[in-house]
Length: 271
Image (tube, helix red, strand yellow):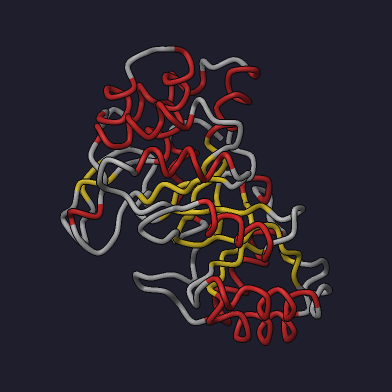
């Protein structure tokens, strides 16, 4: 259920530590007992040179899996990919992630396919809101890209409602590609962020809600639940086939901490 669920988003705000500390923490986690939970490290294209510099100092024993987040526009992708290709002893590119323009049209998605090789996972975040958002998610998937669900941000309005996430999951469960989540899933269980006061979604809520979406059960109730023990019991009761089906839909999420998800899952008896 939790294999490679947690992508390392430590380089992203809020409170992003310096790159040397991020590299140290990531390599420690990748060599630790719970390395199986860890997905790639996420790095903005604008910080790629910093990451490479610190990895060169650290001399990892194997190339570090990378998801490149395009914060410099689609036009900057070829240069970034060329830089990564030249440092394959340090980095193994797994994904390229990017926000979509307001209108997710076929021409733009075809450019994404041209710029990013077929063996690299392409993750596209359609802009949420408006009647065309769910159609944009379907269009992204039709072009072989994974849609991305943003679960939070710097304002309360950036946290999608339970109804919005329910609608997203109804579409995501019908696609031929998985989705990944980003920003805002700071805890396993839904609750109030002590730093912002926002009510935030939990990654365990999202996993259980995905399972319910696949089995025709009450998705909204799972997303709204603050009962960690009940959510953990439901997750624990999933068969291996059901758990695999969930992860075929919900691939991973970006976490700002590598330790917190482990501590929470252990506390819930799930690790």
